[in-house]
Length: 94
Image 1 (cartoon, helix red, strand yellow):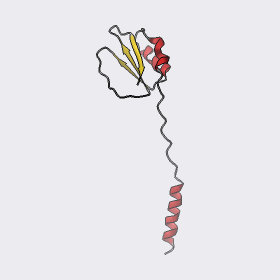
Image 2 (cartoon, one colour):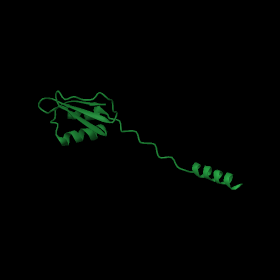
Image 3 (cartoon, helix red, strand yellow):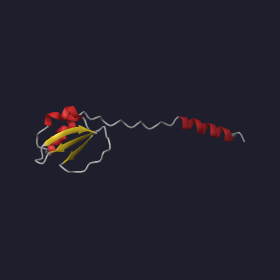
Image 4 (spheres, one colour):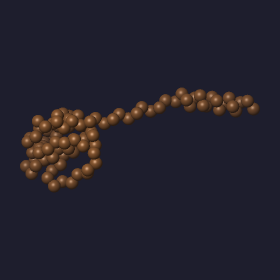
């Protein structure tokens, strides 16, 4: 008869010892100013990766003229807009 309350108390104590999962890290914020030196350069894979690293962005989106893009804001994304010749025209974050 006394065993049930003891078991319940033991389970409650053990449940209190469980650890919480770590909070997810916030995505790295993009800093567009750090990539402005690449304006006018050809949008090669190597240049695009260099822009991603320079801006601290976790994701890169490269857009060609007339290409559709979502309007959602992502603080960890750099957007590189190319002109008709494939040169980098604009670098923004979001």
